[in-house]
Length: 409
Image (cartoon, rainbow, N blue to C red; front, side, top):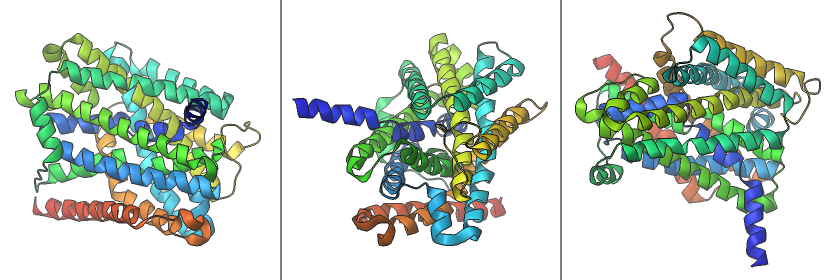
């Protein structure tokens, strides 16, 4: 009994990076993407989420394992093993996706609080200040506790989905029986679904967090459960967002372009409480994403070029790290406050960009995690390699189909 309690205590102490990274993938852009999926395609794309969930476990586990075994972040390893040119290429990919996604997070904060009658000109500057203060004045442990607490709010999406009274038989059938449409919209949304569930920034953030938390190889068997739990919860939450919109909006032909519209559209059919829960989930996911996206960029860039980094350090100990973080917060919040900006286009663009660019990052990861000099006997098994390479191949094929279908239209 004592051994079991000790084991549970170790798992609870280690839980954090995997859960936070996976669940934060259901951010503002993710919620918008899943809402559009449910409203436009009903339950028919749930099967893709199941497959993406399996790939998410595999990819996140590789990153956490590399962090625990090498004690280095992903961009640090890319620089050491592939040189400065490839590091610049990887950082360019990361920043291209991350700047757009950071803007979408603040767009989500604005949209969610507008549901409750709070204008973006108050909510966005206020939340930008709160997020910046949390990161620059807290320790890693304190910040992680805040992140995990916010993750619990995501369960409001599950309650919202239950209140929508879905067709569980059709939902279950669609989860295990694939359907595919060869048209531009379907392929774009498919890529966006993969891009928001397994985004490049998540891998950089997760590996850096494992390193900063001080996880060692002997503790890794517990860290693996953190990754698996986070991935399962992330996919369940994503499924319930799709299910809520598929149950209420799709049968009535209600098309939505963003998560805020989905929350408001739920009101007349699923009740005020379902809409408020959906709005609360959108706020939590946007706030968590707005905190973590700039953090992952700052981690990655500082690691790549050998600058001091980490939220456990003071501003004067890691000036470049905190300056980068501040600049990204200012850009993310500032763009949302511009008049006549089409936020939904930014959201979908950011998630699709993630999906298109992720194979490049995954190839770097695969080269590193299979390097016996770095990983010793912790290299990938054949089964893990098969799933990871299949994920990269599918995304590349979808991107080619996207280009091909756009030429036909």
